[in-house]
Length: 614
Image (cartoon, rainbow, N blue to C red; front, side, top):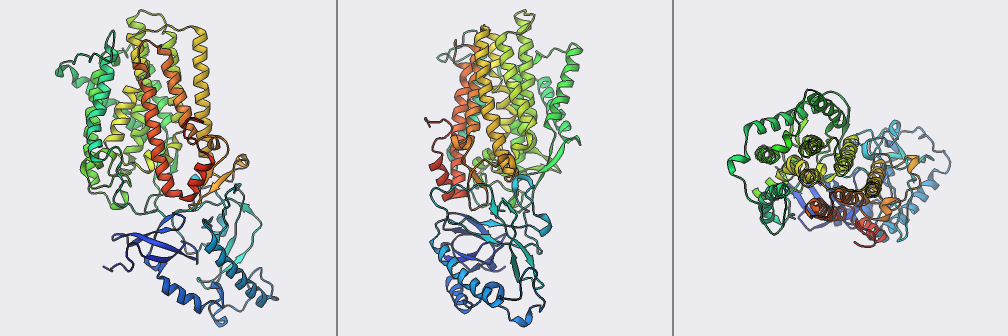
């Protein structure tokens, strides 16, 4: 097994992938398994390079002095070249062109030394594949032998706002694979960069309070759920008086657990149906892209049809309300068992399949955050399935059960206006999430967080049983609102939904196809990874405008419950804390990923979530 040549902290010259240009970099770490060096460029960009792409500074300077008289593409003797004219190059002025090339190269060297941040655009396309229709605007994950590359560098000025039109150069390979000839093309398009993903290393920065914090959260999260549900069952809930605890034997019923298992596997069967399109996710650390079937909306329609059949045959759906606490206990027990299974199987997972945020080496921390990034049984992706199916669709079913329970308990011919608003608002939210299911593939939950107790408990317990808290509260504490108040709350929810949906659509459309003519008015800050940071539209108004829309909707969901108790407003308070914390995590990751470009974005868009406040 070969030993490493360069030490951590050593300053060397690293070749930018796909080019012949070397830049000064610092070695930060070395992966003994993949034999890759993690290096850091001056602008903060971190890439994984092979040892063959790294040279010592002395060696680099020596070679540079030897070849200063000729450009990289002309270092071979003319005898080894084909005597036929290269396409698009006139016979006259060849020597003059070479001289100009040398002068241009000298100027370029000076520019590189003066540049504080370079815009790097890598074209990894075959001549016949000059398009940007790949998912999320990403090029292929691996370089092919018949592809050609060029680097376009541009100095970033403080007030630079680059529109989506960038010049693209197409390269045609010569007979000698080491030689390429540049042919200028007048076609202009935006070409995204394929960032070189790092093989996951040990997680050094622990979140959620580290080992102690995650240990406490494993007990605190279930306790919070049960406390909220017990409080809602009280006739006069008070934060100063803890509700009486039920007998332990009353919290468990095998029939209820069986119904929950049946629900889980019903959604799993719907997930496996060969309907809906199949899309690719973002590249993993090894360059591979996983495939996902987008059929969540179909699963919702089929589930709604099944519920309709049950109601037609007089099935009492308010059974969920009567055994709500037992269902929560069953879901918690199942999520704990699933978390244990996920951690045990992750111990045998390859290094490149581990989550970048859940590979600390500490059992409690990795168990909570998730050790494996994308645990799969065959083609069945456990994390992706649990993210939207059992809990999110179950949330709507629980709300419907609460509506029917309210009508039965209070002898109503139709549900109250408050209950109708809560059900309608949250139904819209769930349908929107399932209709735009593909967008979840770019979220932090899928791309960064592993699948452990945090997501398992959150998806299967927290979402269906805490997010339905307003409907559960209204069953025992009916609230009457007037039609003008209902209209005002509806307008508030529509405003929140518009901000939420338009901001997400703007971001997702830009990621998929930055060259879309419909987005021609958008401006962005280029980054060293090739992705642009939007500085117009919603994303130029405030960072994470989708979070702002989410919070506005959360407030609209709670207002129909009145102001007699703070309990139905727990969701708003919790959601603000959650999104502020998530925004801080996003901020940290984006700063590491985009470097100086992210700092410029923060200067341009100073407010986080809440404009002029935070």
